[in-house]
Amino acid sequence: MITIIIITITVHIEKGFGGKTCADYILSRFIFHSSITEDRMGALSLRGNAFLHLDEQSSLTCLNPTSRTDLKQIREYMEHHYHEPLSIAQLAQMANLSPKYFVYLFKKTFGHSAIDYLTDLRINRAKRYLLESDYRMREIAHKVGYSDEFYFSRKFKKEVGISPSEYVKKRKIRVAACSPPVMGQLLALQIVPVSAPLNPKWTPYYYYTYRSKIEIGLEFDGLHEANWRDWVRSRPDRIVGDEHLPAKVRQKLEDMAPSIFLPVHTMNWREQLRKIALFLGREEQGRVWIDSYEQKIQFARKQLAPVLGADSFAVLRLYGEALYLYCNQGMYDLLFHDLELTPAYAAEVLYNTEISLEQLARLDPDRILIAVCPESASRAYWLSLRHNKLWGKLKAVKHGRVYSIHSDPWFEYSATAIDRMLDELLLFFMNYNPNQQKEKMHGGSIAHPI
Image (cartoon, rainbow, N blue to C red):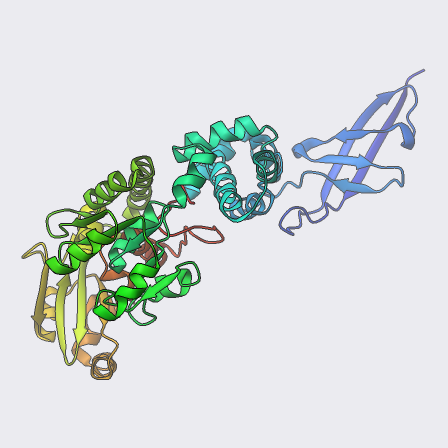
């Protein structure tokens, strides 16, 4: 005789991943069996892809809540559990999405796939273990989520361009930087210089992020006679500077170590990066960085297009009691070439043109980026300007589309500076921080942090 049991259960699905609570779920199911008891009952598959589990104490636990988990929480989970054997199926289940749709949505949301992001997390941590610990290769592989050290080594070489042992050897090359922009290029090649100009006022990012990693911090100009002893003491294997340096200084540097001096006015930052990479044997790292930057630009254009539309942009520089329409090489490359934004003032490619408030009102840009010089007279004028009626009538001002920028990084021309400028724009216009909770040396990228 067949026993028919009708079970009607009201289950309160407990808090799932991310602390979200699902609504009460009413379940009704026919169970056909000759005899069923609690201790023999396993997991009942229920509608809505939820699973009801009856354990030895007859407690009910929801293993897969029906509410969708925020993908940012999934990404945070990956950042804390990258050393574990994660799979797309597992992550998709946490997000309550099908694996196929999870893959699509993750890439659409963040601009890179979940697998690429997990690989980046693992390779990034592996690099630190290689340089900062005495762990063996097998131990490092296990610590970053790879059970096979040989597979880890092949994966590392595919992502970085060189094997782990070569990475350790090449990474330890001692390079001296003659200027902040040169330091920005070296960071993109995964090199922290042994000596470089550092100043908390003019280069606060480099100063506060890297001063503990740079052996010799030079004065901001970095090249007067008082600093030669420090240059010698840093014992560089290579020196990178630019052609602005006086001939006598260049000769001294060349006598100290093999050196390269870049023609900054005739080469864009990509060309400079490739030339430095060739000089230092980092061609693959340079290629990877530039390729990743191009992917990031494509992602940014796609995300910004519906937000910005055909809005016109003006960059202003405020110095003393005057306003200037301003555009340096980095601003032009990023804003009007790479991102293809619309300039409100396009008389020249590069300019630093004084403009009256009346002239600015006639331009009336949709959005304004403004750099206020830090000295007192400029700050006082900026305060008075914000109370000026004509300023208040500008479209950008009325709609809250005036964005304050700073000389660091906006007045530096390097791969790292351009990357940081792009990050700021995404934060301004999208409230999106691509570097949030990512261990990253600037000059890395979304696809290839280091």
